[in-house]
Image (tube, rainbow, N blue to C red):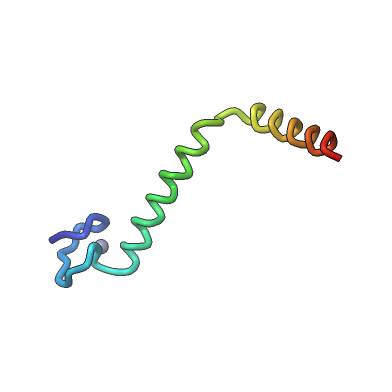
Amino acid sequence: MQCPICGKKIQDNMPFCSKTCQLIDLNRWFKGNYRIQTDEKPNETEVQSELSQSHLTEQDGT
Ligand SMILES: [Zn+2]
């Protein structure tokens, strides 16, 4: 079996050769997840308008 991160041979029955590679894979997965989330709102103006909207509703609530 080979490590999916660095390509080293894995001797133990582990998905990665080391904890470092495990962390790197976790990091990649995390970044990928983050990208998908930000992909929905790529425009800063959209975020800003949403922020001002939530601000308005917050004032309306009280
Ligand atoms: Zn590795």
